[in-house]
Amino acid sequence: MHLLDSVNKEQTKILVENDNGNERKMLADLGYSEKAIYYYLEKPYMGTLPDADQVSEMLGTCGDTLKVFLKIDHNTIKDIRYQVLGCPGAISAAMASVDLVKGKDLEYAMSIDDGDVFT
Image 1 (cartoon, one colour):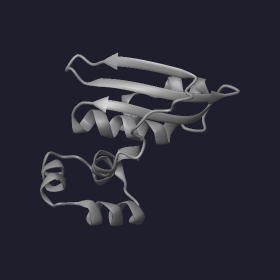
Image 2: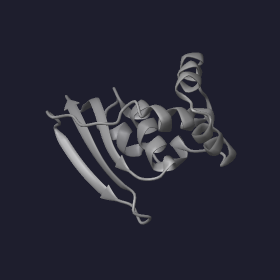
Image 3: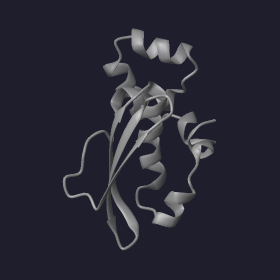
């Protein structure tokens, strides 16, 4: 099972409470999983870390821009925030990547690829 394949009961409750209907339906019709829709609508890790140990920025070939802020302690990722200007896929992937690597060591984080996030 991939990270974006499942959504828990609390996340489903949040989706229903915050859903105006149209955006969620459009994303579902486009094939986004419930988990990806949750990440896109809620953006739980969007923002900055003023005391970040590492800040990196990337520009995708499609024009999506991501800026990542990392708080690292003893080679372990303690916190992550993203600023993302891009499509729902870019936003949900950035948010999902936090759940994959937060609390893990840098070597593990560097081993993550898109297959670990998307089906």
